[in-house]
Length: 448
Image 1 (cartoon, one colour):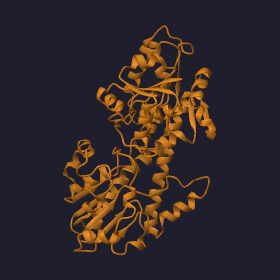
Image 2: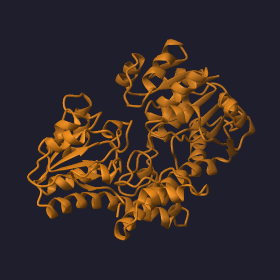
Image 3: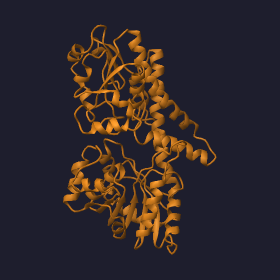
Image 4: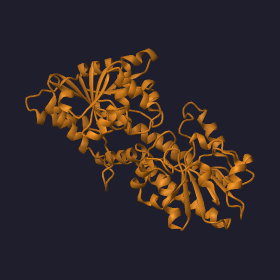
């Protein structure tokens, strides 16, 4: 079976490389010539553990190719997947479907035989139907069910563990009203039958909602545990023990119950906003999701205030070392990361900020991207290592739980910090235990 993926971003590239690993013939298409040229040489534009070797393997086996020629790729394919971006639209939070609609039109112009057109991007309810209408408008002689079918097949890839998520998913969701299209897509996921992956077959509307509902629920779990962390701090509780206590209940589960500075990334913020807008469009309310979005933004600013209050209370010199810039470890994604809300607040209050991140550090090529992405980072002193960032700082703040921050030499940390007052260590990911941190004024999250 030949498959074309339109879009070589996170979803398109990971999905293409994994399908090629399954043995299918995959063509990834993008309009960006420089990006395609780089991919042909095995240069990966995103950071995802294991993706570079998987792409290299796919290219070597001739099962994975990259091109800007959409027409030729689509003509030769049984299945065409739309995997373009759907960012939040400025001003109203709706998902911007400009790229999806353009891809649908381009695909329609290229279809030569019966083709299943799949929306892999995260899209609002009704998008599959709109894609079908665009195809029929572009090719008036086309009949749905004969010349083409449209299906929804959302992805559930976590940044940092996307390859494992694709190869060993909790479930695969296929949304289509046509039995033939459903059968073709089930064959596509045939390699997963060996591990008995559940296949959820439904209509396109339900499939489109499943992705938003899943991300909304997980975002709600994160916000819930963060609110419980606040309560623990007021009452003398320990949020980590609380999370374990409720997570052992099989109805709740322990995942996404780690208190911290709020969620970020490319999915949760965008998808919770879009889910609220979808509900409003259809005359109903997702008030819980509305509150989650509002609370999460407040959470980030509250964490900045915690740092400022701690510095003031302890009359500490105004230099803060931030460890971790990305919204989570094992990804280079800075979108809506807590760091990008916290650091500007510190700078506004005349705090000197030094930063170290394992992917964005002094001297690395990626740093230029980070600085151009977020203007306020230009005022930050980027360091070459965690210990370099910590030099002469009055306060260390862990924002991302990268592995290399899990076993810092605390004797060395203490020696490097400004010791005119007791050094502050603010662990916003609860990596360390208070009893290990007696040399510092230690602050965890949700620790009474």
